[in-house]
Image (cartoon, rainbow, N blue to C red; front, side):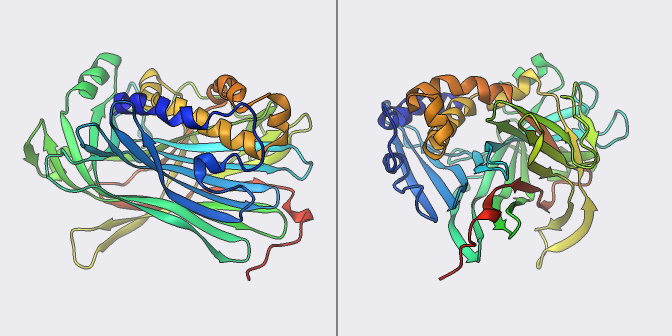
Amino acid sequence: MAFVMALLLPSFVAPFVVASYVPGSEVALFGHTFDEEYWTNSSIVIEGDDGGNASLTASYVGVEEFSAFLIAFNEVFTADEDKFIIPYQLFGMHYKTPENREVFIGAIFAFLMAHEETYGDNTLPDVGNDDVYYVMPFGGDDNPWDVDPITEPMEATKLGDNHYRFGMTYYNLTARVIKGNNPIEFLIWLLAPLYTVLISELSIEYDIFIDETGEVHAETLYTIGQVTRAVVGLTTEHPVSEVLTDAWKMTAVHYLSIFTSNYRVVRSSNGNTVARPTATEAFDDNLTIQVGNDNERAFEIGLGREYTLWNETTEPWTNNGTYNALNCLLQARVADRLLIAWQAPLSIFLFAHMGYALSEQLQNTYASVTEMVENAGTAFDNSQWWYGVNFPTWNGLRIEQDPVYTAYTNLAVFEPRMCV
């Protein structure tokens, strides 16, 4: 899949790199302008030089000097008309803080990580000690069960005063299970399909509410469907319980990129600086991003939420209990970066175009979009924070959970935008 995207990316970039940005240039890429309040384009088509093509969905919300957006893949077709679905999710927000500092932040879904708890008795994936497995969801026509993967974009909708929602849902996703304890083991499992599972659904929906204080709350309504079937090797069907044992835990891993020259990450409760972890680290607090020399609060990640497990094999579904999710920070390993390496050029390109169009500061810093694309990689790579939401009880059942992002903006100085 990384190879397919490498072929398509140059064709995607070429038509939209412009020498200088003027308001409205974004129409060439998205079919809409950033002056509109909200929109979705679910048919952005990329034509590859080799005859393949891909389509993406973009959704956008803009209220005064605050913007939020989502870029996600729909489908990828090779020259031989083989279909793939990749749950690539790039969620970003651009705004000014109450002190009018510009902030541009993106959160990208990286992968799911399962592990067997054998070290430390903390339910967290202690990579290098516990047996750890990357669960990489994708969809394709060529799968052991001959099921059809489906993508359903959720169009941007205004639910009420200053309340918006958009997202993506994927059904029948095949997922490769890749053991990642050491580099050799990782490469063997990456190249050979030793474990393959079928996930009923992956749904990520963003609910954005702007309150009268200028705080923006972005609820990530995050559903991981049940693992319904499992294959060992190429075709040997096994009961799911034999592949995913009761001892397995699940962690959803994300990384955060902050485009600002001066920032630090602190504990929300006391303002103490959080050092980048050198191993998986349990975290019992929210994370706050502070910007500027006076450490103004700009962004908060609320990681701690309850989650519910559902058994989809019963009619109606059986509620298997509600549990507490655990928060953790993770050191990025070589394997982690390899699994998301194909995302980086696309994410940098999209970040650069969105940021340059939305930010006068970036337009003053870089002479053109092209120049920002060439320089954005350093900011993108250097500002990554990896964090995970750990589900200590899983058993392959359906997970429903919603972490929270809060942006602290200058919207309180504007008149509220009302429904009409």
